[in-house]
Length: 488
Image (cartoon, rainbow, N blue to C red; front, side, top):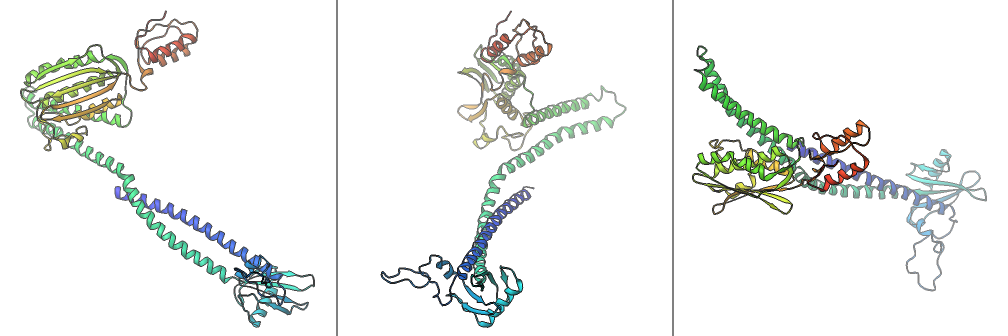
């Protein structure tokens, strides 16, 4: 698919470039053709005024001082006449050739001259082209003596100039197309690189998800087959196999929920309910259930939580973030290991650090830790549980809150994951909720009342009254104040 897309990209690029070159060269050839025709017509107009017996016009270069210019040399238009192969004839009242004025760069036989005059007389138009005895352009004019003057210009010089320009344009165009083809190859690789990465990630994601779903499905089908093979047994006798089915179904439910969470985030449809919350209390509440888990795993659990840390965020997601980092640390702290959780405030940001001992993560695996289904263990052992989605979900939660999640791991200092979160995510001021505001309603209008309730409080809170003054005041206080007093 990517190769087809790349070929299509190059093809479209080359078609567009070819179209541009075709338009440019076509305009150049058209303008050149009109210019050459104009030169021929100008030369013929001069030839009509050319008297018989006058010296052919010549282009003068460095005429010696004191030398008189010859016939035609003093005329500045003679240069045009000297460059174009042109000649003229004068016909008498009977239509016979009275005189012939050859140009300085063309000679015409009497037979050819008569044939050219005859062709002009047949056409009967004052200006045009003829093909016999050669491709000639002509111009007819009557003089004051009643004689007919005809000027001829050879069209071969126009064609030769146009052919030279066509050949030059083809060579230049071919060279330009080759250069643009090479550039298109480079640009296609550069432009499709994100597409290739996204395609590879999607392919790997589907393969990993299929692999993780296959295992519990296999267990469920195997246990269901055992239950069905003993229809005479009671539920109590089949409890072992039914328990296995329930456990694997629970694991599948957990995996599907994780995949749905990541998919919603990718589609920018992840629901967020921002509220002012105590991160200190939330972290402490997540830490307490892990004390028993750490005790059973033989891991020492320690914490340093700074009290009074508040931020705006989604309580459910932030709770899940702390649980993921703690669960990951306890699992990989190792026997007789230690886990330490630290929560501090640094200026306008909240810093959550979870540190654990144990085997360090190899440096080559660190850049991939937050990828979906990625595990440092190439054998993808499931002894520790989980599906390799925890850190990917943790990073997603931190990023949607406007923060950053990083990880380090060394043998001397152990493994540490640090989440840096802003206290007030961008764009969250109008999404927060509050139940500490009372508004006295001074004006009527239920629609205005509903509108103000939605703008200021979202889905929570209520409004009994509102005025124009209070509306502006509350918007100001909601944007810049944390503790909002009651307004009576």
